[in-house]
Every structure is written in C-alpha cells, then in structure tokens.
Image 1 (cartoon, helix red, strand yellow):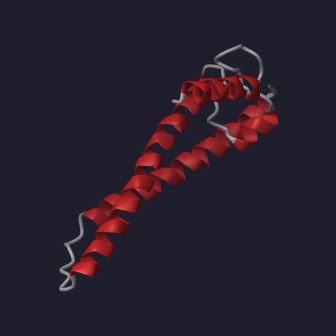
Image 2 (cartoon, rainbow, N blue to C red; image 1 turned 60 degrees about the vertical axis):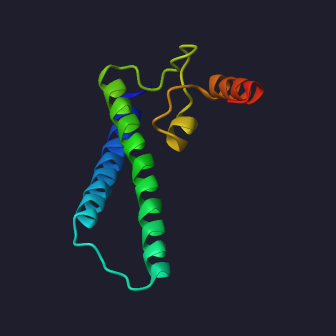
Length: 120
C-alpha cells in the first residue's frame, strides 16, 4: 500500500477515534447528572428504556474504539491492509468501507459461511 493511502487511513481512523471518545465523554457526563424524579411510572420506564438503549450504543462504540486503536497499531507496525487469515492484501475498497477490518473479503465470507453452518 502506498504511503499516501496509509496516511489517508491513519487520518480517517484518528478522526473516528476522536469522535467516538467525545461521545463516550458526553455519556459519562449525562450519567452523573442528578436523577430525574418521575411521578408517572410510564415516564420512568420510557426514560430507563432510552438510557438502556444509549448504553447499548455506547457499548458498541467502546468495542469499535478498541478496533480502531488496533487498526492504528497495525498502521504503525506496517501490517495494516494485510489479511490476518491468508496474508493477502485487503482491497482499498474494503478498507474504505470498513477500515478496522482484519480480513479480506474472501476470508471474511468463508468465516461467515462457517459460522452460519455451525449456527454460531
């Protein structure tokens, strides 16, 4: 992969990481605010449901943060864009669609077919 492409992905991943981290900060801030008192149990349930939904989203973002950090480490180690399964190059189109990917499309497709066959 050319240095220009590597720099593009490094900037893209760094920007994404900063964005995810800023969301995490607002979630923590929102959780430490005084609790609302709801007279109506339905309002309380709705509020709790929204809060649980936000926590699930933040959990997914936390996992994505880990993947972005690992991708940035792969850039530093000159292994970014190389499939961890077969060792071939991952296509730039796939990396643009999913820059944290660790597998080429062929290996990922095989893995997903195997998971489906095993019922995982």
